[in-house]
Structure formats: structure tokens, C-alpha cells
Image 1 (cartoon, rainbow, N blue to C red):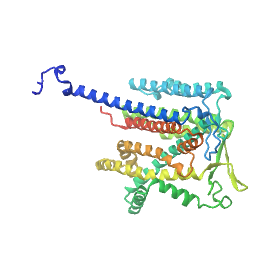
Image 2: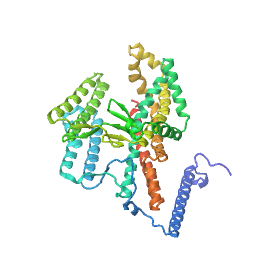
Image 3: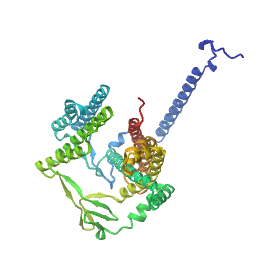
Image 4: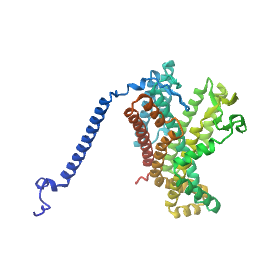
Length: 462
């Protein structure tokens, strides 16, 4: 068969030799195969459930849980005023985003116009405060007990997973940044210590490290009556870590609102300063005025309305401590293990990102008289971040998913609670499906956030 001429119309080419048509056929065939497999799986599952007389659905979430949870966070109830408050906050953020994009197209920022700053404060704080004021007591939170439902128990597990993942990501990033920079230090001892730590921790499985921290470290601590005390502020024993707990007073909400409003103003002022420098080269003061504004506003509210928080310290009563902020051994072991393990990988990402920056950049900075710390902060790290962000995203995702190992030591995260629900209710498919959806939501949220940050950090051609 003679090949078609270059000037031959696309419609006259045989269908199986047309690359566009062939690509569509392959995609349709794959889609049909996936749909057929999903339909077969669904029918098979439904048939098996009917044979075992198992009722499917999510009605079981309303049944009483009847089991205790050691690590409890208050669960917000989505009813009444809380729904309206969330709608007001989301709508305000969306409108501020549109306003920011509009100003950017005009070649300006919100911080350059006082009227727009006032509008932003009204959208972000005025409207939610009005909603909060008129909602009354409809905003509440549930403190989990055994009499609550499976749905509330699952929410507690979700919040515990979110808590350990968020704190772990922050601590692992800070520790990894320190270790990555230390490994490139000119001090031989510092560099070798960092390299030794990284190589040891990276090559030991996380589950082994988790068992070591939980059993060999935390469980060997003294009993409550012989606790390790650090200036009577932090108390450590085999029951957990006890820290002072801030108890909000009457004007705590106003104090936190003043800090949030000040930080919002600082954010828009920072954007204005940066754009002013990019456009004219003029460097407006930022750091000292921002710190002064934050201290002045929060201090003024403190002086006028009184102390916003009172610290509550843990006290030994009987055989255990009461009061204060208690971090259970399970949570502490999870947080330490996730932080140390992930930080070793982040350290290598930081090291490779710094080494990816041309040596000439550091030499140019030194020729301008910049010190080593200034060179790293102003020249090297901003360029290295463009290399570091994609692998950092993977490490944050790994840390979040590795939190499911908490079920091995009894930490009440979402997998552990889902397993308990499966054993008690006999429902297996629905809890597993909900667990998959929860981790999928966490992973997609992290990916979207890091992709947005990556887009903000990338070089834009002019």
C-alpha cells in the first residue's frame, strides 16, 4: 500500500492510520474498559452484601460509638451560625482575591489605596463579625464522649490526623532547613554530624523509629510522681508531656482579632513595598514598622481591656496530673517520629537546592559586601526554592499519609478510628471509602497549595 501524499486531505487517510482518530479510539476504549471494570466491581460488591444480609449506606454514622478516644479535639458543629460564618469568610476571601487581581491588572496593589484597604478589612473582618454577632449561641463545638455517634468519632480522628500532619510539616521543614544548611557548613564537625544524622535516619524504616520512640524512649520515662520538671513549666513522664494551657478571658476574641487585622494590613503593606521597589527601585521600610504596628496594636488592646489569656498549669492530683495542655505519649511519639524522619529527606532537598544555585551568585554577593547569612537569605535560598518546592510537596504528602502508622501505637487518627468502627458496626466498605476520601482530600489540598506557591515563585519572563 502506498503511503498517502503530504497534500492528501486528512479525511481521505485510512482511519487506523490517522493519528488523531487513533488517539481518540484508544482513549474511548480505555474509558469503556475502566467503566466496565467499575460496574463489575459495584455489582459484585452489591451481590455479596445481599448474600450476607448486610445493610449498606452511611446511616450507621448516626449510631452510638460506645468507645473512648484518648486524643480528643473539639468537633465544630456545622449548623446555624457556623455555616453562615464559613460562607461569609469564604465569600470575603473570594471577593478580596478578585479585588487583588483587578488591582494587579491596573499595575497597582490594594495596599497602595487606603479606600481599598478599608474595603478589605470590612470584607474579611467586619462582615464575619456581624454574622458572628447575630448568630448568637448557634455556633458550638462537641467534646467527644462515648455517647456520641460514629460520625463524631470519625471527625475526631480526622482532626487528629490534620493536627499531627500540620505540626509535623512545619517542624520537619524547619529542622530539615537547618540540617540541609548545616551539611554544607565549612565547619567539618557540624557538616559530618548533619551527614551522619541524615544517613542514619533516612535508612531506618519509619515504623521502626516510631516503635523506638514510643516504647524505648517515652514508655521508660518516670511515673507521674517522679516526673521530669523543666522550671515547673513543662512536665514530662510516661503519661505524656504537660505544658501551660492558655485559658481565654473575656476579651480574648478581640485581642486575636486585633492581631489578625494587623497581620492583614502588614501583608498588603508588604505587597505594596515590593511592587514599589520593582517599579521605582525605592525601598520603603517594612520590618521595623510592621513589628511596631503589631506590638502597638496588640499592646493597646491588652492595656485597655486587660489580659486576654491566663495560663493554667498542670497539677499532680492523686496518681496523675490535671489541668494544662496534655500531649499524650502516642501523639508525642507520632510527632517526633514524623518530624525526625521527614526532616532527613527535606535536608537533602535543601542541600541539593542550594548546590543547584550557581557559585557565581555567591561570589557576586560577596563582591557586593553581603555577609554569609545575607547571601543565603537574599540570594541563594530564593533561587533554590524554585528547585526545592516540587520535591518538598512530595515530602509533605508522604508525612500526611505516614500519619496512618499511628494505628500501630494506638494514636487516635482516622485509620485507627475507622478500624474500630469496622469491628463494631460490621460496615467495612463505607468506613474504608471515607478514609480514602479523607486522605485524597488532604493530598489534593496540599498539592494545590504547593502548586500555587510554586507558580508564585517561578521566574516570569518579561
